Length: 489
Image 1 (cartoon, one colour):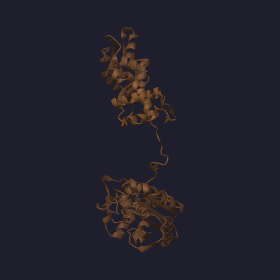
Image 2 (spheres, rainbow, N blue to C red; image 1 turned 90 degrees about the horizontal axis):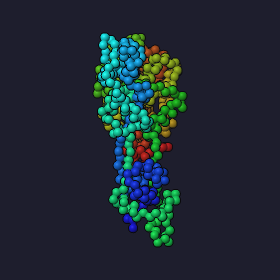
Image 3 (tube, rainbow, N blue to C red; image 1 turned 120 degrees about the horizontal axis):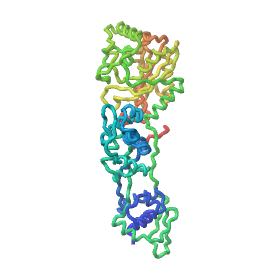
Image 4 (cartoon, rainbow, N blue to C red; image 1 turned 90 degrees about the vertical axis):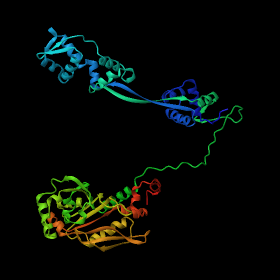
């Protein structure tokens, strides 16, 4: 009597292996008439029940490379040299004659022919000498050529194989993994109890309860709970980023992209941030060590920006400080450079990307996060237009309670801070900063019309969207939370 109820696939494999042990999955597939997927599945079941064991092996096989194939057809370069000398009167010739014959193979041909003792060089002439038996390398090339699928390294002289490996593209050594399946002692005992009368119909065991030899009936519970399937989906933060991008495009904005690494000139100086400002210290900014930008801007831009600093902040502006490379602390550096280079009279532009701040990680601060930033350039644009744009953006994001507070930023005047009401916290929280670029920013760069600008962290929007109290939860990759976030809010 069998101690375990076995699936028909398991029984079929047991019957096959009791006749012949150490079969590969492919051989089992051919003998048992099962599909390869059924065989692999059955092997795993038998292994789990300690009825079968699998020994995995890895063998190296040798096949011919491009030059190995040429050597088989035309002969090794040194063999071609010997054959050429044999055809000549006196069995010798000038070095240049052989160079023209062998071209790129001249060096290897001479070196290996001398190594084999087949030639000698006397006064710039190559002379034939000695015996010219078939070498071990030639024998291996001939053997491998007869087996296009490859010859096991174990069947060849390993020293000669290593020698051929040093000759580029003569041979290719690749590894192939294989598995051999055999029965354990327990598996042999189980196999002996398997009856030959078992029939297979659509992989389901069918036995009649009225037959005296019936062993078991496999029942199927159609009301059993099915396993939970978690479909693949994009990260919730990526969904928010895509939504923000789609909203700005729908409002008529065009996206611009810039590098994560920027010069201090565009990250700070062009935005009228003085070179002794605390934000430019190592405590607040990531600098690239021992690397400086070469061409930070054109000479006119550099001169006008430096003059604005000297006049506005009353200090001696240093060009070397402006050349220092930083991981950008905001995406405004990308926008201001676009405006300075293209001289837009009217434009709606936005940028989304990673920014970096040398800050201590906390529930509301990260050293690396995503920022969205935008500008509107126009002759008659006003602060009221900026507030209206921000209100429309928040409404499209599903945020209804919004207000604006006056604040200070180095490169905008007037400046505002947008505040939105967090229902979960029950209080107003800061979100985006905004304002109109100061003349000290726009005039040195040749920007004639007013520029409305705003920017803020996308992670803060995501926190509000998903009801999080700690920004670090967005990056902890907790499967429980990731799977619980609905795709559609």
